[in-house]
Image (cartoon, rainbow, N blue to C red; front, side, top):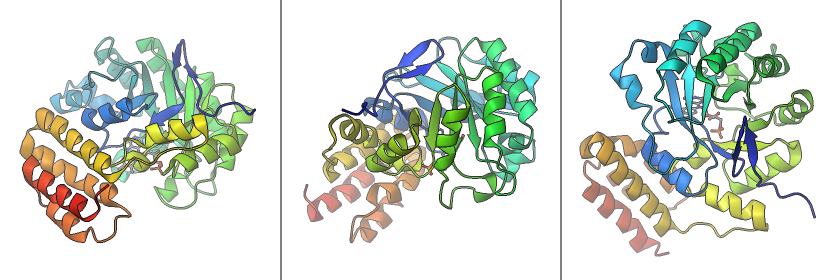
Length: 329
Ligand SMILES: Cc1cc2nc3c(=O)[nH]c(=O)nc-3n(C[C@H](O)[C@H](O)[C@H](O)COP(=O)(O)O)c2cc1C
């Protein structure tokens, strides 16, 4: 009998119940969405990336990103920045007892971030990765994890070096997005790198990149022997992907969640977001989730259109219930 692929994950002195992670996603992973992912079995959730500079300057907008949902037992905060001292001071500003870990962003490809020397710009400076991990760890006392990419581009693949630098700096785990900075979010992820990384470092390795289904998670865990997988785009509009994956990994099969329940999750997310941001803003923010919710549903263009202009919860409710009339499940 092979080992179960869904298994506890050691993070410093904490043992997480499972090895299925929700990745940080700017503009998506607010606490309403994370709360549903937690309810569906995400082993650890993460805030979107938070600016270390913003925290140190005490910016109100930055602090609003730190809110935790009541059911989030294991929430990490992700920081980005380039200077070890600023990163350490930012870690000291974090509210006490809110986070179980601090993740450091060494992968963001966006020019606005890269030109400040943060995110994936740090992949070209393994020594700086080492110093940042050390500084944040000393300042916070929390487990610190590193989120890296394969390298800057295909001619400078150096995940072995950057992961080693993070590990030697005291990182509790490393997450590898199996693409280069130059690839942004497209192109085939190189999962073989996960197998190689597993041989190289003795901290847990988490795999990221195109984890869009329970089967993807199963294949990556099984083929590469990595310790955990991270859902990102695959969880948008589908927080229940965690439940389905736990079922698949634990029993060998799963019952896909029916459309009516998918819509229910969406409306609950909208309700929670309305409480945090007000109904009008929440409705506008949820528009970008709609294509993910309706992906693969035939003849949903008119519903998509109606939902994409909805300004109230009621408008969403009526647009989405019309799709259930067409596809009653
Ligand atoms: C809209 C969006 C926002 C993201 N924001 C962050 C972020 O704030 N921090 C980070 O480390 N990665 C971020 N990522 C990267 C994801 O965490 C993940 O590593 C990447 O999307 C690969 O996984 P996937 O192909 O399964 O989506 C973001 C990705 C997307 C699509």
